Structure formats: structure tokens, C-alpha cells
Length: 357
Image (tube, rainbow, N blue to C red; front, side):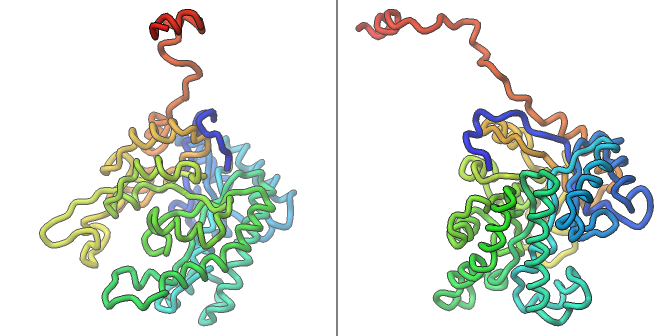
């Protein structure tokens, strides 16, 4: 990830994560048609889910620079760029607690179902392919999940055995460090989406994971404020603390409306009836003016990518509203101070006189 971010250029965008929109019907069933659909709505970039064969062939992309040039050409013809490759589903399978085995088998091909070791090996291979494919596409970053070994023990009752969390993160480090090394070789940051359900779900757990991975420089963050609002975190202070590690940005809204019946855990209710739920951009409670200002302050110059997961609004409406929403929030960074006109220049004699010296 670039250092000296305060001198960087303006954020790129708007982009759109295609995972929630891909489908079997046109225009959502091929990269060419969905890219044109996105461009027609005003998006300038697309984040590609690498598990969706209707849009992308990850193995082919890792093995063929020619194929990647063709993919880039398809997007160029439509009027969009590729922002990042997403390996969220594969990254989730790098570390799976046995309680989730049956549910997460659906993220993997049938030949590795009911075989956790084979499924994990497949996931690791997929992550390695993602590094090479990202390199072939000339991308700066990729986005993913860490997976989870400890999340079933998130609430400390009964008391967790001594060393359980430490060993869980040590194992995460052992599994992810070789993958991060592959991303280093490819020159690509791996931005983990900090997300409940993953062992890395807030700043404290990210720091534990980062330490377990030897403070690997490719271990970065896909910043998504919606997950922080639903945990009642200070998502603006998060940027102050971790801005040097933010390599990607999911623009997603959410709202938290606690009642006398439910709070952060939301009572096992459906998304529609939860105290905490995701919303379309502008319909929730996330302070995007503050977020875009903070990111501009620290010189974030990568993509702002809409992720849409609203429980109320139709996805086509959410997408149509998302591009102008992001475009209107991106701050073009100034190249001069507003009061430069009043500057008298550097005058050593004047400086001393002003201080009475």
C-alpha cells in the first residue's frame, strides 16, 4: 500500500460490487452486459466476484495474461475499469469452524463437500490464483474475508479456556501468511473486509491478526462502515487509527434502531425486522460526509465501491441511486490552501520581528 498518503490524488469512483447483481437473466449474466449496465448507470468501475463463472474465470485469469487483457478490453469497451477482484467466499473457507461446515460447503465445488481439509486446500489455491490474476490485470488490491476459528466463542460465557483465542489467531496467521507472501510477490494488497462472523470483526481483532501475520505489509483493510455502525463502533475514529492500512472501500449504508426487545444481536430476527440492518446508500445512518472527508484528509486515492445489501429497496433502484450518491461525495483534493492569496512569503526578518526577537 502506498505510504505518504497525505500527498496522494483524489479517490476513484464510483464503482460497484457485482456480486449482488449477477444473475441468469440479461443484462446480469455476462461481464460484457453487466459492465455496460453499470456504466449506463454512471459507474466507472466494477469489482468482480471471482467465484461467479458467468462473469469471470479465475483459474484462466491466473494462467493467462492474454485472457486478462481480454477481460480488461471487455470492461474498457463498456466504459468501466476493474477496481478489484473479490475472493470473499474463497477467503472465508481458508478457516472454517466445524460448526459452520455444512453451511459453508455451499461456497465450494461439490467435489470437496463433506471434506474440510480438501475444501481448505481448494480455498488456499483459489487465493493464490487470485494473487496472480490480480497481477495480470494490473490491480493494486484485492478484497476478501479472513474466515473464522473462534467466532462461536465471541461471548465469554462459559469462560473461554486460557489460550483459546491466542491459538485461533496463531493458526490464522499460519494459514494466511503464505497467501500474503504470494500477494507480496504479485505486488497486490489483500484488503480484508472486517465483518462479524469473521475472526477479524473490529480494530482490536485486526491488530491481533496483523500481529499473527508478522505485520505483513500486504495485510490491509477493505473499509466498510456498515459493519462498524451495526457494532456501534466509532467508524470515523477507525479511519484515524488505521488509514495507512486501508486499501479498499465498500460504500454501504446501515441503520441501528434498538428497542426494548432487541439490540446489537437483533434477536435472531429476519433482516427486515432486525434492530441493525443494511440500507441503500443515503437511506441509513452512516455519516458518509464524514467518511469521505476523513479519507480525503489522509489521501486515500483508490476506489469507492458500492456494495448493495438493502433489505427494503429494489436492487435496480439502489444501483441507480448509488452512482450519483458516491460521485457527489467524492472530494477532489485541493492543490493549494484557501488562504494562499494572503501569504506574504517567507521573510526571516519579519518572523523574528513578529516574535519580538
